[in-house]
Length: 286
Image (cartoon, rainbow, N blue to C red; front, side):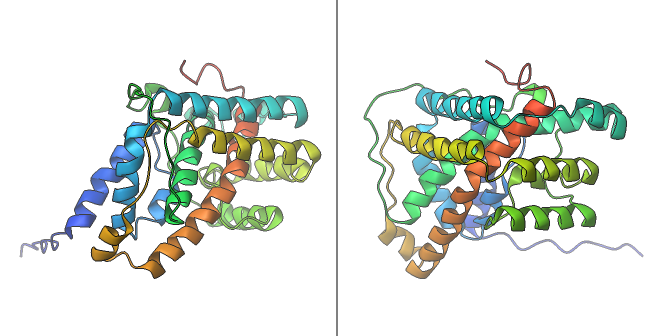
């Protein structure tokens, strides 16, 4: 007897567009992974589609420079104030082989990509609060698109082990965060290294160097958004007509506010671990 699959019902138009938009976000930002924050708000595809349509023209030279500036801020504070450890021997001995290589590429990809995600998430948090981003009015060429080849084979979020999830809960509680940083969620399939990362983070979080770094990153992302060349504003009446109620907008604003609050910690963790694993060179392309 042949078992025939039942064809899935065709998706709603917004949902069909959403998949293409999420893939375009990943390729335009040049990251091998789609940050969980985007999946988290994908339950409101109308917002994601409209917000990305307003954002995409701003992925230009200024955007790339702002991301690079955030990366430098995190790196400078990490090297000067956080006394980064050396994890290479641990990873080679406890993990080893291709798994160790994948782990190193993953952490360095997070260090490289999270500043771009931070800029987008912070901008979307403003949009959800009905705030307008005015733009500078400058004409700029689009940034280079596509995922760098060195990011091939990174660990993709979504395969956490039960042990890894327990460690994540401990870290989130210890840092008093509203959500799990993606820089740690991506490491959850490797509990031994996640536990080591936890000890390093606990030893540094709350220190003057840690807090100064977070303040500098928050200031840096605000300055970065101010360099966007094109204005960003959503037509809320049109979105409401398509089903995005004000109640949903307020829920999105809260969700994006929490996501933006996690991002500087997220970046700092990724940078600390990237340095601990021998990065960021030669992984970050010029």
